[in-house]
Image (cartoon, rainbow, N blue to C red):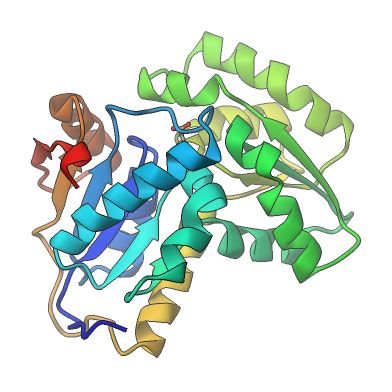
Amino acid sequence: MRECNADAPIGVFDSGIGGLTVAREIMSQLPEEKIIYFGDTARLPYGNKSRETIIGYAKQIRRFLESRNVKAIVVACNTASAYALDTLCEDSEIPVVGMIHAGSKVATQVTVNGNIGVIGTSGTTSSGVYKKMMDSLKPGLNVIQKACPLFVPLVEEGLWNSKITDEVARMYLDELKEAQVDTMVLGCTHYPLLKETIARVMGDNVRLVNPAYETARELKEILREEGLLRVNGGRSTGHEFYASDLADKMQEFAGSILTGESINTSKIDITEY
Ligand code: DGL
């Protein structure tokens, strides 16, 4: 492992604004930590791209975050976690945390009838990563994966609560209701922004698992084990936000997701890394 200092920042990245739902959880559970956030808005969406492409993007982003001397990286994107986490971890000198493990663990613990739904991008669901993880944690569960490709553009367009989103959610989720899932993982970091709509469509008896919350808890544990948890530093205020395109738009969204934080987003050319 590279020599790291607990005062160094944590790198967090996603294809766009979805990872801000993870940054929000990290800020709430680890308020003393400084975050360097990168949203790959120029190359969004990741969900319909190939494994090779996503691995290439993720390596560039890791180089950018390492150039900012981060002490850990959170892959705040399920698609990038599904395709690139192993590669990023293989030769990393710092901890790299993905989205799949923590959310899967909670889902396997809370299901009562053993029917678990996982919604995500086409990349995440076709990789089968959640099913494999859940099978390894608790064999014998019935894991039903459903791609919801229109959810990401709806979120990026700001249609978090709209009739169109309701209609699209019903189209995707009816199948999972019929399969009587009692637990459903929001397997894309954009989806917590549609939580109200998704909860309304699924009904009160379905427990929604937000891996963002669970991943922030896992990150805290890992930092503590590695002696990298920042303590007694006071609440961090100097978070940095970067986007590969449309930095102003990301700044606006970040303002509505991370209320109360002061946000300044800069555009960078990620292909230089
Ligand atoms: N937010 C990302 C995820 O968790 C993907 C969105 C996209 O398709 O770019 O999978």
